[in-house]
Image (cartoon, rainbow, N blue to C red; front, top):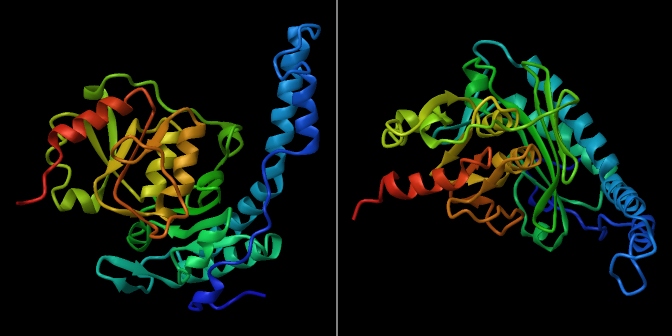
Length: 325
C-alpha cells in the first residue's frame, strides 16, 4: 500500500537482515583456500583466481534485483518529471531558495510505491517524505531524491537527476541516477563499476590541481563562495549536486566540492557512481561518507577523480573562507 507522503510513520519500514554473501560464495571462497584458511598449496593459482571471481560474482548477484527495481523506479519517475518539464511550471517554496513542484511530489510517490512493492521491509529516506528516526535501526535503507535540481528544472536547464540509492550498514551499495532530459542512465553496484547507458564509465586522468576542471553550483557562485578558488582551478558552473557527481563519474569534470551542507539524498547515489568509476568521494576532512545518520544533513563534501583529491583538500584548507570572528 502506498502511504501518504506527509505521514512521518510511513517514512521507514522494518528490515530483514541480509548480507552480500551467500552459501555459494562462501563455498567458492573455501575452495580457493586450504584447510587453515590460507591459500591451498595444492590448488593451481589460476583455479584459485577463478574461484575468487566466482565468489565475487555470486556476492554481487545479491543486488541484481535491487538494481533492476531502482532502474525501473528512476525511469518511471523520469517520465513523470518530463511531463512537467515545460516553461513556467508551477512551483512553491518549501523553504527559502528551496522550491518544490508537482513533478517532485509525483515522482517521489512513484518511486516509493515501486520500492515498497519490491522491498517492503527496507527503510526509506527521501527529500519529499517526512523523515522518521525509525530508519536508524535498519541495515538497509533506500535514499531517494525524486528530482535533484528542481531550480534547474524550473529554469528549463537540463541538468537535473532522479536519484535512487540503497544503503546497507551506512554505505551505498546500489546507485541509480537518471537524467530524463538527456535520457542518460547512470548505474553502479559496489564492486561492479559504474555504467552510463550500459557502457563502462571512468573518471578523468587530470593529475595537476591547476589543470583541474571543478564543477560548481550556480547559486554558490552567486553568493561568492567560489571567488577564493577561481585563481587556483578552472571553475565550471554546472547543475544539481547529483548531476555534477554523475559528470565526475564519466570524466566530464575532474572534481566537485561544496562547503555548504548537503543532505544525504543529494549525494548518496552520486558518491557511489564516482567511487565505482575510479574516483573518491569524502567529507571535507577526507573521511569516507557514511549515510543513514540521525541528521541527513552533511557538512560539505568533495568528489574527484582520486588523483586530485588530496591536493584539492589541501587547497580547501588553505583558501576556503573562514567564518567571521
